[in-house]
Length: 278
Image (cartoon, rainbow, N blue to C red; front, side, top):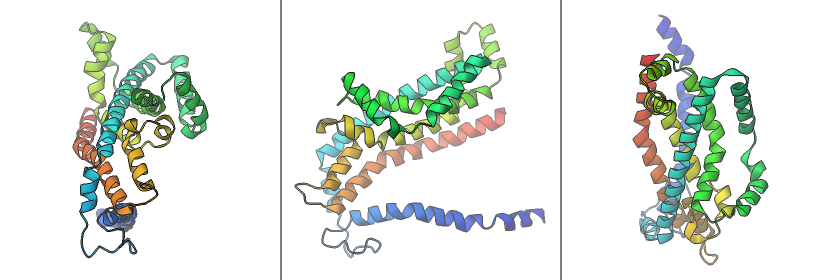
């Protein structure tokens, strides 16, 4: 009887969830639908075309700038993920285990930094990158992206590390393990769920980053996928081919979608491991 009452109380959640999903899927449907249209037949963005124009995808595949953009974006994403995860996890381990007023002050300052919107630092950031001669540099952009994501990642890691018993550290120390060995072999494996979550979030943020690459990357050979898509939407010689641009954008989404599908099972496994150990 109680389960029936609970179902009635939460029954409204399902139609709301379905509407939310449809709301978020609508732009993707419009994008994919337009990608198989022709330039002459774009009046109704919701109705399917009479004939599917797959030539837009063939043209996008043949665009060497897109593949160069893929490579550049992969380099930036991998470096950003590595730097952000390693630095944040190590810092979180130290802050969580240290305790005291200094650690509390670091956590407070870190939260204050998280409140500052990145666009508010745009002028200062650009000036600093120019002085350091890091414009038109993929590594420079990757380090900048990692620096911007470290406060949020540090915040998440600290909360997870605090929940790990100190007895594990003490047992590792008795066995002769140092701080770094304890962290990488004992603590980091316990952080699988949050690590995979932050890897996905960092990769998506790096892949979709538009503002800083637009200001820092002036060399077309260094363009990321987002800048290549933006250039395609802008058109060639003033002529805009929206279906072709939509096909290019659809291809640009594939790596992130594939990465999520590959990593989502690790999030679930990490959550189950944490629940069992808790």
